Length: 542
Image 1 (cartoon, rainbow, N blue to C red):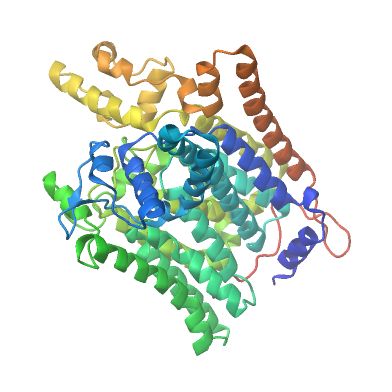
Image 2: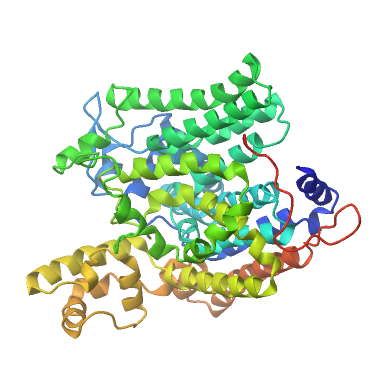
């Protein structure tokens, strides 16, 4: 049953790395993400996580200094020792240490002592935003590609699935920010990939558990989906007669150790293993952590006019139209995979700030996006044997890529300012915003692009506010090499930045084109495997 998938994996291992679809996918995605990166941190909560990384490197402490926290103008909880603390997870601050270390070494080598702190501040941000996050996001696409192969997709179909995730959903936007969601999701994907092997060795099981547990270091609300994922693979081992004490330990202990780090981090900060300080921050604002009842915000985060998941990921509309006829070929593994997805969605819908004001769409739902894309790919596989469906879906995918590329190039902190300013201006003027969408980033982005939306009175009032116009950043501010070009006085430097950024874009597109063109797997008889078909492998219990 896994024969075809095994052949595809073997065919890729036998190729030169220069022609490997996985390698070309990684290189192409990395170059495109790096070229489109903002290259700097733009919001206060991102600044706080950066300051924690700095303190870890300089002093071995998880406490930012009061001067650092005061510079962010953020609301903070008070720790057990009376000092302000960061209520964010430790994961991203730990992940940033390589960038901080490299920037620190470069500052000591190349910059005068008086300028080292500022140089390190800028260099560490750039290395993390323009190198490390693009690399992490590209690795996440490779994991999605390999999982699609394991589900029975042909190589080209698997590549298209990875590209649909990476450039046709709001995954793309979050490769440009310091938000944690793409990083933790990439780790989870690699964990699932390792655990889903037909015959998993104990070291691979332990590594898969470790990677699947990494999201706990970023967000404590990932506990339920991580625990469910590991439990499903434990049940798979039971059904296969492979569950032993050693395998059970390899499956749960690595992730449990990361959970223990989270508890220790909480205790160091607040004196309680169960509290990160977030509830205290919200209490200062007169708010609570949880909604009035479980799942209260489910409609808002999936379909609501402000942050509805479907509005920011219209690609899933096509999948929904063909889901029922395609589900007859749906691998049984995906029925199990929907459990963590559904559990996480309901959990997020029970949190007060799930309908987030800051961010491109409901950013807390980024972790479910790859699994929905994989499910859609498996459901649509039977239809892709017909050319008309392939062409139609390719056109729709191209439209979604264009939507994300055009709409996603905005500083979401600027959109947040616009949201608040528009709400204030509208309330002062007694004018109702378009469809009541006081926090709809799509509406603001369209207005910034010059598209008239809403009634004339609303448009006139909204754009009459100077603070609103000031919140619209130039496009060059959101792409690092365009920003450096705009700031450079030398024509030679301006040309160099354009050549660097443009060259990265061209090289990225070329790598993806080569990977897709060279993806022509053959079965044992030397026959080409049709696009969109393959033999699904039993990832999970059937």
